[in-house]
Length: 229
Image 1: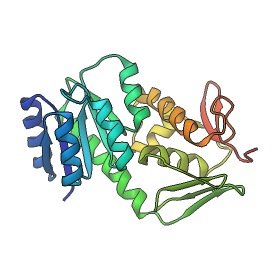
Image 2: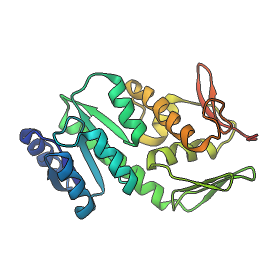
Image 3: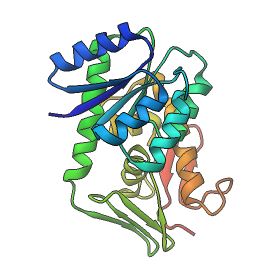
Image 4: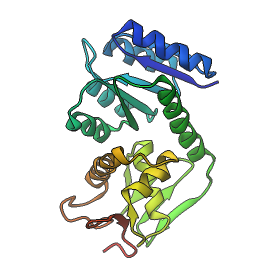
């Protein structure tokens, strides 16, 4: 049974999400502020975290920063903020998905299942992806080595990179990349791919402004270089 940590300062939302998750077969632990969330994540070892951005004491973005320094646990942001930049910042910090309030509890449960399936699918794979002589991705260990340098990637970042590196030179649309990491494309979330790519480039490229590995196909999407220079 997978364990989900639900973090929100509104008790009614926490109870609603808990009820739906428990009815779907998940174990649930909860926290009402950022500090409590970090304590629960460290002691409860959840398989996934649903994290509200607008938390007291320590907000959701700071919690995400702290969690990403410690673990690769999947994170779904829960937010009432309508500004897209807030959502993109959260994704760049390493969140895997976001759901905007007001939300459908059934959709949230579906998102939880989809993210967990991706995580479990990554763990079951047992191959090494190599591109040229200096790019190696160890899929079961989720370890990336580029130019002899170990790269620390979140699960979603690693999965996006592996999807493209398996077929170097192939152009992927944003919708195709969303489908690859979520199992189904959500058109309204295509901008999330840009945020993840920006974050990956910051980590893997010698100069993110002149990418060597993860290239843009203007007006279409992205591709991994078939002969990184």
